[in-house]
Image (cartoon, rainbow, N blue to C red; front, side, top):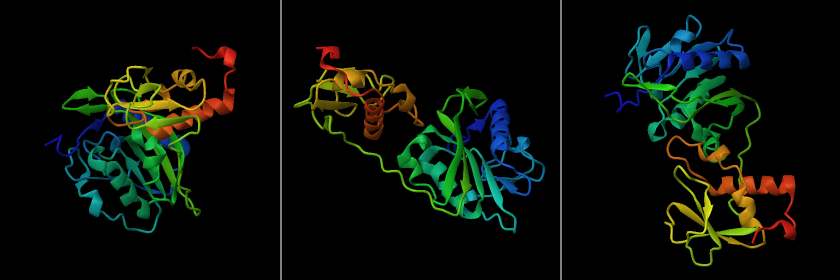
Length: 267
């Protein structure tokens, strides 16, 4: 039953830190606060008295049995939705966009994939990201045991001007990402614990690798030096590297350091 309803509770220490972070960035006075997926109440207990906690399957005292996807906050005061929505099946995005028409503030613990522009572009455009920070390892509890799920704290606020969509390039004039190994100069692992590894094992699976054809000298050496650790864990599951992330890191490197001289290139 717990797994079916994605009942991964926020640990008590993480719940305390999460609410502290929210208070540091948002003045909660005058706002009505709703915890939309209160579960066992670890976050709800850290929120101010009068906070309304709901859950489709409540497991703590003072939590109303309600389905947030059909819930209406009502009332005249601005609402802040604060909590840790379920992650599976795209429910985190669904919860965000369900909260948005009713909210002034949305502060959620979310899958780390919400750091990606492709995910943020699917969120209600009236909201702007005020603050984000990664959640520590083993932040959740399932079946009484600590569980690690890559997650991030994000605080969003409503503004009068709509947020621009972020369009990230998937290509770069210095190299081509091929669908097959034919014509490739090298490969790089796309998914798994070694995502971002550059090698010349061109027999590797195309489902787990990018095959790269370099247009100009030095591409392979530059890509080998990129810090993929900064992006491959921005997911809720296995580490992975998107084309947009590769192109973005490469472009940032070129902008910062320029192209290496021919003498510096490694044959």
